[in-house]
Length: 99
Image (cartoon, rainbow, N blue to C red):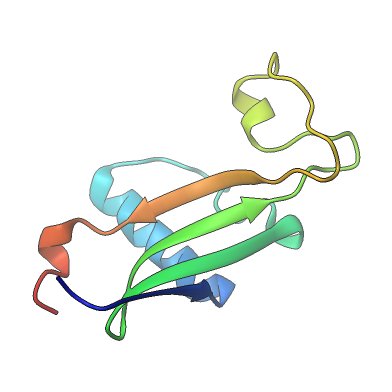
């Protein structure tokens, strides 16, 4: 097993990783990866010096809604003290194994 580090990450670095994974997996997120940047925090997971995964957390808007409500509007509205894991993505193991 490798040595892993998790921590706060620069948003553009994580977004580029998300876009790479989305393309490789055939996802079609449209503008949603970048739609909530003003309410987002980003975390990364590194194997040695290679960013292998990331997490985007989004706080609710003024109405208490998070991006999930665009897909499932029937979900309960969150309080202002909540966050939403908008994206959690990790590169396939084969692409970084042995890095």
